[in-house]
Image (tube, rainbow, N blue to C red; front, side, top):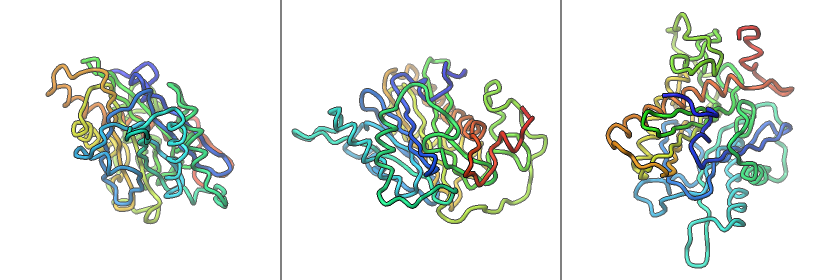
Length: 331
């Protein structure tokens, strides 16, 4: 496997990602969309998820495709981002058609970033506008680290952020991952600059330091309270998958979260992964292709998590150091 040309989820042809954020608020929204609806599914493993329209993604539900997926800060307030995205899609005539009406289908998930130093004293929720702005900004290239829904993210020891990565399989299928890392756990090993995801790093995409020389054996302690931690992600492919097959890819991708964050999937995290299949390329070998898609999704997600932390930028309201400031001079 090799990374795609941008090493972003938008290496999957047809997908676009947009970010919108507010420095005063210290929060933001990230939207993934495409020119046409796409198959989507979800798998939740965390104990404290916050979601919109995820029941609709089960394989036995009527609607088979969605128009966009959003990731947002703001805890439950961030679910309002879907309203702004729906409005933009409605103006474009997009949505699930019921008689003369088209209803845009926009699932989403949120992270808790209400205690990160930003000003949260709004009278009107800022998230519909952030959702609309993120949708309008959707493009093939987009910022990582302190951007979009990852703008105010934190982890157990370092500032979190927005990450993405991609790979191309020998079959020609492309897989990508997009993630907001706001975890209770750590993406780095103990007090070292080494990333848990180092064995899967491509080149020096998050520093090229390699694995940590020693793995700590101590039992970890929670550094956040119930409801404050979540890692939410999207994995995508250009393969033609059913909703059930897409759900299996999302399930396999959770291995990548466990490889890159320690601990992960705790009762205090709301960890979940959406999966997306654009359907542009049929499976040539259903057994091998399905097997490799799950592995690639997990690998891309592990890399994307490390890249989220690696690209985080320092800001005046920060309550945690970034990887760069904590380990200045390491690169």
